[in-house]
Image (cartoon, rainbow, N blue to C red):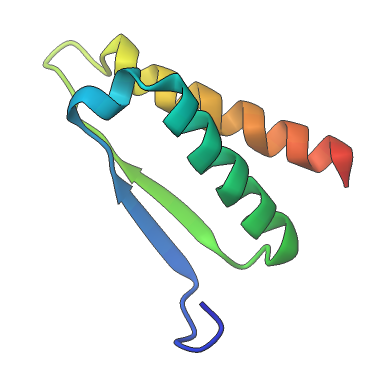
Length: 76
């Protein structure tokens, strides 16, 4: 990230990985640690949406991300 000056990451999460809580937690822990070290880094998620809103699996990815960021903020 430092070499290329990257300040924004976008993750397109879909399919079977939506239900892979271990992978989602690992990714979100790593991103929370990255943001703790470099608050300028912006993380975006591209997720599927249904006509009636965000499906529960996609919402779970975002809730896990929020939880990991909060946990990271408490441990620093």
